[in-house]
Image (cartoon, rainbow over all chains, first blue to last red; front, side, top):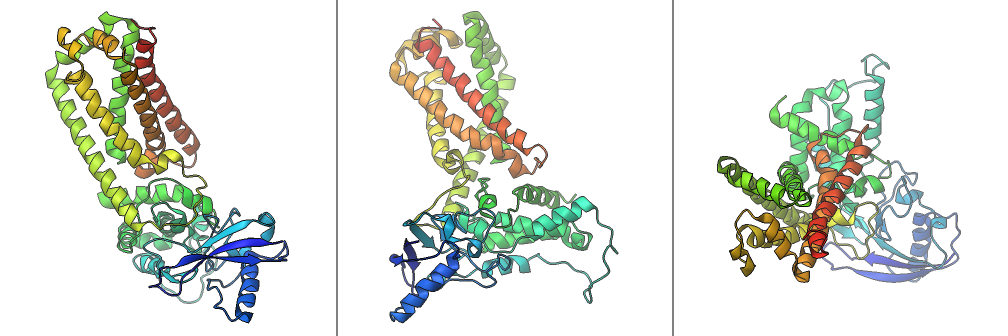
Length: 247
Length: 203
């Protein structure tokens, strides 16, 4: 398969950046999107050009490192997959493909397609933890947890913190990320100690990092590689009001 | 946005219900208008609440827009998967609504845009409507404004419970489609009034 890539190139944080066209040829349909970029980078390196910088790590959809907006959609045209799980068979032969980094004030570009996502770390520091004794893992089922709570907490805990939610949001809001973190900790007895303070602290941290505010467009849910539901945002709003009213 | 939206949306519903009395003839509609005028102790506090809600709604909306515009990233190419047209243009549809409300107040409440209204009593709403919607331009503007109202309410009504955290996975689908349906019913109901006068259904 052949493709015409339009890739965002930006030397460093200060550079203005621009789209650059690349032609990639004879790519197998079973090649992943990142492998396709690897092949392009090999060519660029051999030609003495600067390879395209992009984030990646596990390449099996569990680490949350990869972060590309492909044809205007965070993580590209696949559903419930990360960029690294996207295969070239999802594209039409000869297609023009636009590749851009996550964008938003809270995700400054470091280089090319790499962005600084440490804003998420600072939100986690504000409340994404539990105050309980650590040590070796306790036996299973020592603490009784209702099946439906455990399942729901697990749904929220699937968040890999990739940032697609904020990248896809028209307002660059990180609500789904915060909602997933708050949701999973709130549902479990271990997280209950901070229930009254966690929501406020994490939302405040989100605002301080420069993320926008949620306007219920559900674009986050549609691009989330773990398909985390916006129901967690409703739950977050509920918990926020509850903490505010101190009930 | 959601709380003041509920109040403003509630007013739109009551306002529509009152206006639909047009179809029951001049006596019923004008008697309703008269009864509102006869109860200033009810009318003015309600107007004050509405105005407050409108101001808060506007302030929140503009603040929200400015904040989100500052936060937002700009893509060379962007493709929305689910975000509806209506949800992406709340500021635009809201601004058109504000202009419409100002004109509507000048038209039927302050009665300064139509010289012929000077001949008719304040509570002869029926006659005002019949005269007011003879003009194709006025009728067209009202109908067009209702499209914007429909779009504004479509996102507002279908998502306000999400903001307040009062929805739940079991009935979300019904709540959201209920919001859509209500928005379009309100829009069609409001559109029918100027249109039926203009087309001569109501004389």
